[in-house]
Picture (spheres, rainbow, N blue to C red):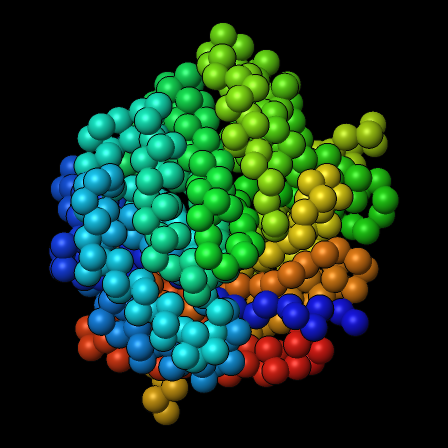
Length: 459
């Protein structure tokens, strides 16, 4: 066997990127609402969102979810990973519950189950409530309890039907881009001690959410977290180059917060990378060594979700280490100029499972293409098909060689707002005309259906 008989084939989305209805039915503002409507220039001297767009309407999934789910069913999806808008459920972040917002997600779960699509819930995908940001956001030591309160509300309503949970999505991107670089919401540029403490609180919030789910879930839960980080693949399959890629991916002696170790070591092993903390010196807060905090952060998980799009290439330096390798001239890139490195889905799950010993779920993988509707009324995207074929073939090879891979979620189910890039990047398997809200299944959606039907054996 290559993929398991119970392998999960799905697609993923995020609330702010697809839902729209930003100011309907009692939803409160998130930091992304504020970011999109902020007319000030960002640190690079540009407007926050390309072309001045917002997520106010986006794909209007809030009003079109039932028909979109039918399209997902036609695509053959077995699972749909979606995130919940915290401020749609708790407009102020804590306290008063917005019943209309909560009912939307309950109805969404019911519609998915009716279509025989398993709901995979992500509790947080960057859209932090603005009212909590005003109170200090993740820098506030109360933030883990805010998240625990929110989690309890969701678990109480949905866990009689939902069994798959992810606490956070890409905390690296949210914290680094939004709190260190200041390019995305909430557009902060914190000092080293400030952002390390914000990361620590964010990971404590993850741990509290795990505790809440375990304690209150009505169905036995499967809990994970979805990470995105810097990774490396070897330029060849020679043992010395593979070793170099493993060292580069799992490096610990770095202040670089894109390193795997800064996130998976505390969440799974119960400690931050010691050499990394030493690199920060006196700017490393003492809280990062607090045994009780670290025990909370490392609450046991059932699987590790990883979002994998591209990796850097490295070669052995001949001395037991690695050096970065230059990409070949004219190497393939996506519409976003991301490198095409299919071998990422072979090596990265392998490296991570060797160290962290958890089953792997690919929680995001895909590419942006310059899609449009052809004269025949269809959306032909052969490059996406080729991309997915190459990446999934590498994932299949990893599974055949014993890496415990439980599922794959394409990013994304539907075209959406690509954050600061607005609506210029199309990642979806379903095409959206943002003016008319008309949807069209792309060729890749039909191709993916055949992959799902064969459980990947046709790759």
